[in-house]
Length: 133
Length: 136
Image (cartoon, rainbow over all chains, first blue to last red):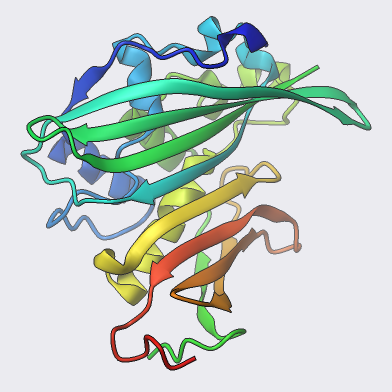
């Protein structure tokens, strides 16, 4: 894992929630497909990959050695179906940890979701990617 | 009704195991290109016996259940660590329990398989109901 990517900020990209994808998202969880609101965790770092935030390639983490360590969501403002959202991803830190089965590397990447008009922050997501040795 | 007391269970909910089709659908819905969720051979190369469920599906379950129980406006923060893989058709018991009562409530979250293996743990922060704020 490339620790020199700490602090790297990716070019921002724009998203709008899709009702079709949200319906699939709820259905896959076995939940009622209620589209009154955008599901709270609909916005997810994975959507960045199609917009140039290819963490695995950029951090040099082979997918075969990668695990998803966790997620953190902080909600500030509601996101509606018609809102355009500007997303900026930043590599917060890369740390190495010793374990019984060898070293692990953990990258924390923060995604800020801002309402395109006002640029107010609506959501912050931190995802933790692990590389096994 | 949530009394907002330490130790109170907010929910203890069993969620059915996700089928392979549901896991594939979740990948499509989140635009996740990782083959580990849909390709057994790739999952084996990664050291797993078969495809694994996405950690974010557990996050999504917790968020949905918290919103169902407490309302969307009260949910402020959700932080989960994924501690063990979940395989297709493995049901999970999700619990949320009041751990701290301050200006906001901190809920302790745990997801576990039927054999007791903890697959995710973490916490959520939710705002207190206006009537209860300042009473503890």
